Each structure stands twice: as structure tokens, then as C-alpha cells.
View 1 (cartoon, one colour):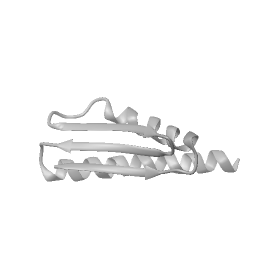
View 2: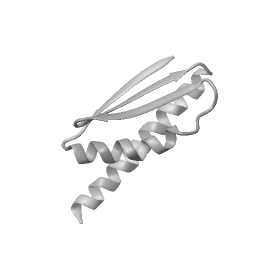
View 3: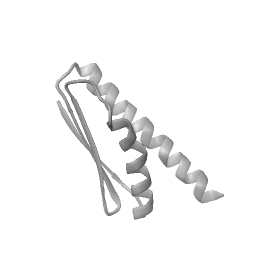
Amino acid sequence: MEAKIVLFYKTIREAEAVAKAVSADNVKVPQGLFIKTIRRAKKVFTKIKCEARLQTFMATIDDLLSAVSVAERTLSVVKNN
């Protein structure tokens, strides 16, 4: 199974912050799972490959999107203060 997720941001700084925030989670992953996140301009690209169970694949996507949500909310709070 494979997923490619692309997120778009208003600024390069926002994209960079989100990419760095979620990349920390990609360091140690179980065998059979590959995750890579990169930033290009105002976009954040994440590629997920999973040779494990469907539940692992879905949980990985859910974890990624949760981490993105936390990073985006943090950016929003910082910008408004």
C-alpha cells in the first residue's frame, strides 16, 4: 500500500515548520513501513509505503494527520500572539 499526501501553505515558513514538526515522527518506524516528508516551496509532501497490515497503514496516516493538525494549531496560536 502506498499514499502520497500533499499539503499546501500560505508561506514557506509555515510549510517548513509543519514539515519539521512531522518529520521527527518519521525517524523510528516499524519494519515494513517507510515514511518520508519533505518541503518544496509552500508544499509539504509525505510518502508512506506499508508492507504491513491495513490497520498499520491507516493508523500511520491518522497519526500523520494528527501531528499536522497540532503543528497547524500551534502556528495559528503563535501568529495570533
